[in-house]
Structure formats: C-alpha cells, structure tokens
Amino acid sequence: MIRIGILSAALLVHVSGVSIASSVGRAPQFVTIDFRNGLPTADSSTGHAVADLRSSKEVPESALGAHEIQIYRAAASRGDPVGEFYLGEAYYDGVGVSQDQSRGIGYLRSAAVRGYARAETFLGIVEYLQAPGAPGRSRAWYWLHQGAHDGNRLAQRDLGIISLDDRSSSSVDDAMHWLHLAALQGDVVSQRLMGELNATTSSDTPSLEAAVFWLTEAAKDGDRIALSDLIHIWSMTKQIHAGFGPPETLSGALVLTTSPQTATQLGNFYFGRSPASAALAVELYRRAAQNGYGPASFGLAEAYLFGRGITANAYLARRGFKDATAQGYVQARVNLGTMYYQGMGVRKSLTRAASEYRLAATHGSAQGAYYLAMMFQTGQGVKMNVPEALHWYRVAAGRGLPVAQRVVASLPNPRSAGISPAQERVYWLRRAAEGGDAVAARELAELYRRGVGVKLSRPRALHWLQRAAKLGDQPALVDSALLEATEPTTANQARAGRSALRRMALAGSSSAGFNLGALYARGDGVTRDDHRAVIWWRVAARQHDQDAMIALAIAYISGAGVKEDWSKAVTLLKQVRVQNLDPERRRIVEQELITLH
Image (tube, rainbow, N blue to C red; front, side):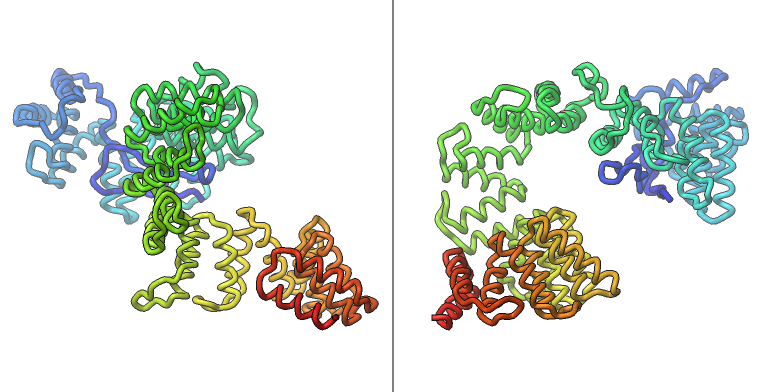
C-alpha cells in the first residue's frame, strides 16, 4: 500500500516529494498542499477587483495593507464569495490583520457554502488537518469533493493525495481518478504522482508508457523529481515501447531541461550510456555551464578528461575543474588533486595533489579528507604524520564516506563513555555496510558470528553476508554458503549451503573448494569422508589455493583419504612456500617440511 502523509506545518506553498529513483513508484512520504496556485474567476465587479489585487506575483502577501483588507471586507459584507475567501484567508494566516483562525474559517465556510471552489478546497484541508478524527475527516471529504466536482484542480489533487492515505482496497483507484483530473488541468505534482502510480500500481502490470507520459509532462514544467523518475525508468527498464524511451536528439532532450540543474541531471544520465549519448551529454553540460552551474562545468571537464563525447583535452579538463571549484562545486577540487597525483595531462606533483585534497577537505569533501589522510599516512606530498592521518580519516568517516568508516573501524579507537572499543568498531562497520561497503558488511557478519562487540547472532551474520554478496563481494558468497552449511536452522538450508559451495567450487572458486573439503574432513554437517575431502582440495589446489595445497600435502603425509606419498607432499609444500604467505601459514609449511626431512 502506497502511503502519503500530509505535512501540516505552516501550510507551505511548495510541494516536496520522494523520487522513485531509489524505488520505482514509491509515492512521496510528505506532501504539502498549495492552496494559492492560480486565481479565481469572479463574475462580480468586486470579485474582479479582488482578483486583480492578488494577481501580481511581485506583491508578496505580507505586503497586504489596509486598503486591500478594506476591499475584501466590503466584498464580504455584500455576500461576495471571492471577498469572503480572501478575507478568510487573511484572518486564517494573519496577513494584513491580527490572526484569528476561527474567524477566518467562518468566512471560508461562508464562501464555500456559496459554492466558491477555492474556499471549498481550503476548508477541506483545514478540516482534515485540524480535526483528524472521523467527524473532521467526513467534513474534509465533503468540502474537498465539492471543490473537486466544481473543477478545482487543487481540490482534485489534494483529494487524490488523501485517498492514498486511506487503507481501503479502492483507495489507489480513487486517488488515480482525482489525480488524473488534476493532471489533465496541468497540475505538475499530480502529473508526477500519476507517473509514479502508473509505474507500480496498475491493476495488472505497471503501465510504463503511461508512467513515462505523465512524468515527461511534469518534467517539461521543471519538476526535477519527475525527471529523476524518468531517468530511473529509462535506466532500469527495457520493455518500454519505441517513442517512450529517452530522447535521442538534442532538441528532444532540451524539451525536458528547463534549468541548468535539469540539463546537468539529464546530461549525467546520457554521459555513461554510449559514445553517441555522451556527445549529447556534452552539449547539455555546455549549455548549463554557460549559466555558471558548477556541476555542469564539472561534467564537461570530465568529458574532456576521459575523451567521452568529445576529443580528450587535459588543459580544458583542468580549466573546467577550476571553473567548477570557483562555482562552489568542491568535488572538482578532488579531481584536480587526482590529476596532479597521477600526472593526468599535467606534470605529476604530489605536493600540489595534497594541497588540492586539503582545500577540498576543508570545504567539506569527504573524499578530499580521505585522500589527504592517505597522503599523511604514507608521507606522499606531505611529511608523514600518523595522528594527522587518523584525524582526516575520522573526518571523512563522519561525513559519511563508507570506505573511510571501514578504515576507522580498524583503527585503535579511543574509549568513549559507556562504549567499548569493540562496540565502537561495530558502530563504524555498520555505518559503512549500510552505506554500501561490501567488505565492511562481511567483517560485520564475522563479528555477529563470533559475538564480538555485539550479541552473537547467526541470523544477523547471515543477513550481512548476504548483503555483502549482493554488493558483489565474492568471499561473502562463499562465507554465506558456508554458514548455511555449517550452522543451518533446517536440513534444507544445510543442503542448500553445500550445493552452493559445490557450484562455486566447480565454477572456479578455490575458497569454496577448500571449505567444502574441510566440511568432509571434519564431518561438519555431513558424514566424515576423507576421500571426498581430498577430491575437493585437489579442485581448489588447481586454482593455487594456499590452504587447499597445505591440506592436500598433509593428507599425503598422513594417508588420510589418499595413498601416502611424501614426495608429492614435499612438492606441494615447496610450491606453497614460494608464494606470498602470512606468518601462520609459513610456520605450518616450514614445520611440515622439517618433519618430512
């Protein structure tokens, strides 16, 4: 059930929402209602006078004076619903008069009774917000329906939004009915919501063509959230019919770009698609950059740097990054530092790189702080200073950079009040894992598996391993299957874990092969079978897995699962010895070789 809440604070005059870029079709969590979009059509001369007073957007409502209020009051005294509406609105908001909401509602109700649609709409929302119980909701529905049936697009939109807050089975259909009527009248928010709802809540399958149509209409009017939704659909969906996909020409793209921000937003989408699309992105960046928009200058500089959509030109790339920094886009400073660090189109200078990273870090860049920390840690471009490196790692972590958070988790953390170093490590690993760092998720899973800094929990360990695996961490795939095989909650789960290990081992995962062999060697969840253990160790040893080679050598020494053969054991151990071994593995290898000699 899509759920939309009404944000009641101050009855704001703009509309906000949550894009479907992260979850296709998810409706906004908070929608504020605009009561003042558009002007009424009044038949009486007094009504025309009132409408004229409020028609100029150059005169803010706070500037209403006694003369305007006097006109409203005179019109209201003659029973003119337009005058009653504006006078009621003035009292309700306290604009030009002392605020008196009860008096304001009285005037609004009088105008609504006379059939004035804007008053009906305003009164319906006031009832909904101020009296959320059944009687208040009933009155709200009544007035909003009156306004909606009288053709007020704001009443139609508000009724659609409120319908989504209802949990009845017909709520989405009702919402789409009213939003569709408002969208047809050009209400941008309703158009966007129609697009989002069509993307997910059609009766049978999502109507992507209808979603794209309505989102396109909203995007043409400058709705950046609608454009984000369009881009997400184009990126994730391949079932859209011809004509509903992204524009393939500059003129088509410009229809959707009403500002430097939206031009850059669309340019970012095109930049990574194909060389032809990158050329389109370059033109969008160029137009937006001419308006002094930093992110557009940055995008154009990256195009020059990597030669995407345009001939590579390191000089223009560097100049573009400098323009972007002058326009306040701090990420460009990080890229300048990387150009100097790697010598990309400029003379390599670690000192200059460190300087650019420092400037980026001091202006709020998490990446700049992270790279500066690395340079202090290694003494590149600056004098080695470990405390300074730790400081900037923590700055980057505090700014939300997952890789920095994982680094901080591995550092000796000072004991905080009531928190142990182990708990501090869990805190940073969890933040990094939630931010998408696969290695942090795998390390957090190990802490849950061992109960270090957290309560021992196999389900939580499995959860974080599965998240790491989804993020592309191959070791986590093996660890997840191994945990299911060795610590299952059901027999089916144990079989599934072993099957997953077999598939990965046969597909070339040496770690899966070694661990599968170890299961049979220990009889862990299976009948002990040294012969099968040797089979899987041989599979892993062909991939030069160190642990499998050592285990296979020991099997040849002891004759467990294979005919005793010390010469083969020596050969395997010597092959392992020349590899880059950690101290513990090297100790085992040397000890076995001494024993054999």
